[in-house]
Amino acid sequence: MPTEQSTTLLRVRYSETDQMGGFYNSRALEWFEVGRTDWLRQAGIPYAEMELRGAMLPLIEAHVQFKGRARYDDELVLTTNAEMSGKARMRFEITIAHSSGKAVASGYTVHAIVNPEGRPIRPPQWLTEAMG
Image (cartoon, rainbow, N blue to C red; front, side, top):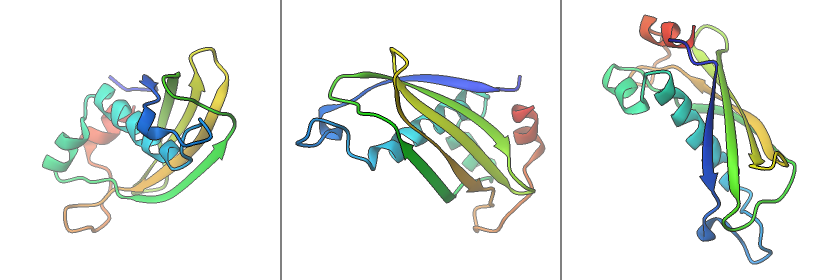
C-alpha cells in the first residue's frame, strides 16, 4: 500500500540542546533522517531491508529552513512526504513542528538510488510500488 505521508513523534533530548536552551542546528538533519526512516518503514520497506535487497539511498542534497525553537523535552511532530525525483533519485520533504503546531524547521533531502557498489540504478519495482 503506498505511503503518501508519515507522521513521527519525537521528544527533544537534553543532549540535542545547547547552552542557549534550543536545539543544535545540526539536529534538524538528524531528525529528517528519523522521518525518512519512518516513512520507509511505514511504506513497508525498512531501510535495512532495502540494503539487503541491493538498493541504498546516499544523501546528495539537503536544505533546511529554521523557523522556530525547540527546547529540551518538547514534543515534536515530524511529517514526511516522499516522491521520485528524476530517474534514480528520491526526495523527502520534512516538516518539524511542536505538537501545538508551531513550526520548528522544514526542508528536504534528495537521495540517489544506488547499488552496493555505489552505482546509480533505476528504482526497483518493489520501491516504486511502495511509493504508489
